[in-house]
Figure 1 (cartoon, rainbow, N blue to C red):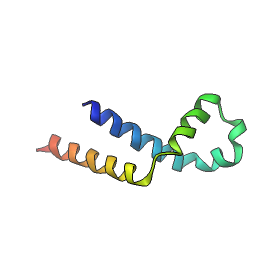
Figure 2: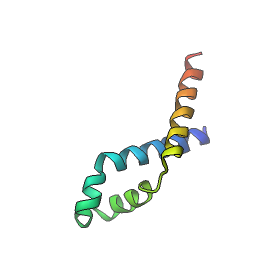
Figure 3: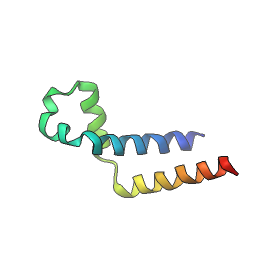
Figure 4: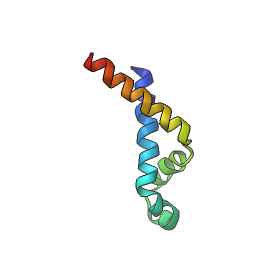
Length: 66
């Protein structure tokens, strides 16, 4: 279960940065400090870590369905 918490955090961070990365890049000073800090970390999630997390999430879904 702990592993899936990390999987969720990786996916959430990666996708959040992609969703509001424009605002982060262009209007960073207008974001709340909490959101800026989150996006600072989210910007560092590598593509391969995201892909691995997605594979693990899919495996977990398949296991639940089995």
